[in-house]
Image: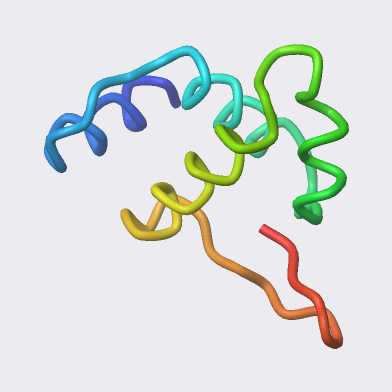
Length: 75
């Protein structure tokens, strides 16, 4: 799975970083979760702003998709 992430990022001109690997691992390991849940899970590893930037990048690259749940969303 990490190979696919690395390949996708490199094709788009990005490198694999610790925050990107951590967010990817957290998303692959479980069910869809809200940004709040994700930041709580990763707060000891990465700061909140980095998590939002990584998720935004992943969304732009098609690695993650927002799932609407009422008036909120999960990734």
